[in-house]
Image (tube, rainbow over all chains, first blue to last red; front, side):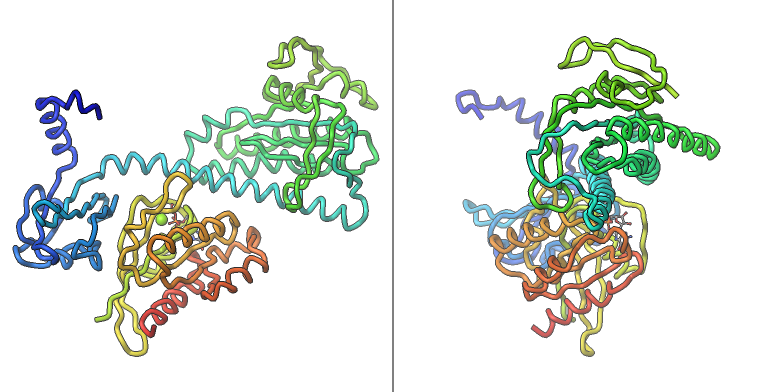
Length: 341
Length: 165
Ligand SMILES: Nc1nc2c(ncn2[C@@H]2O[C@H](COP(=O)(O)OP(=O)(O)OP(=O)(O)O)[C@@H](O)[C@H]2O)c(=O)[nH]1
Ligand SMILES: [Mg+2]
């Protein structure tokens, strides 16, 4: 605070009046170095159901203070639930000048309930993230473990250069859906759609590199396969769109909201790295086409698969695509091949 | 009557409120309501023929940007440190909390609850982690607030340890 310009009295008075109204404070003066009520004031009836007798012990009326009095040093107990749905800040302090002990009770129910909403959303999101990571850990872990044990796991050198195909898939409209449904429904829907995305990837020898929010990044051409990486990725993409379609039909019949997915695929050189020894995050791919695949995905509409030139060239039996020209963030003008189911 | 204050601590969503509700009211709900601040529940238990009144402080979950105020722990006799057995990150969080409590208030007797033991598919605390917890010399319980498995046993264990200490 700027001491050269102290708060004018009138402002102090307004601030005090404002806070006294919102906090409905009650204060209790204690007989020094005891827990006995010497005097009391403010809205104490709204904090205590029983009458507070002068000279009686406050600890028996307020269980939160048990073991905390007499006041050794000032302390604060924020947001204690004194009565149902009522939150109170309890402050205890010793006034050295007058050698008196004080307790101050402030009603913080309104602000706490508001904060509760944010806290709830944040905590649910964290739980969701942990659960997704676990799903991912299991999928990647099982797949890699299985292939490693039967000798088909083909990557081993960190820093190996290889042509791979990267696929991004993302649920469209998930954020508004997330905000308008309760966590249980969101979790259930997310699991259903994740299932549609993860299974085809694994069936086509893809590796789930990471799950980003409501989408997945997968790479093909790292795990051994009979087909080339672009073919694998494309087959997986078509299968994802088909599965999502089937799921939407089922959800439609059950009267539930339907979501769609967009997919981007690009092929190119990448450096493969093994990140640390942690069993879950064993592997990552770094290459220019990875970014391209991500950009294509963010341009793909619901039901659409967008492929870059290199991927289409690599396909064994390319179907007929629609040619689209796009301006991609960080990449510029480019064209891509589109298939919409 | 003997009275003991027990604080229930851990990361958000590990099941602190559910464990307390299961122990005190024999109730469980799938629905998650994040706790704010602190709420006290009480239960009287019998330890070697003596009535012990447990004052249970169900405290909000520790978060990166929302630490548990150590003022809540003044006068506590014991701590139930709850870990979500399906989320290893909550184990690290438990260690962090204990360390802070230790530096600010000194050692308070505690036991570890590895909760959600009914979720066997998602279980992700491995033997090494278990051993690491056991090596601290503090009791470790596998609990489920959902099925009630080991809930009463763990509270009674702590109560007994506090009374006979
Ligand atoms: N399956 C299963 N679910 C549990 C168990 N314990 C808690 N849960 C669920 O986990 C979620 C969180 O439980 P809470 O008891 O609210 O967790 P908390 O630790 O009090 O959370 P905060 O107050 O936010 O820190 C709820 O959806 C509970 O239903 C358990 O043993 N098994
Ligand atoms: Mg809680």
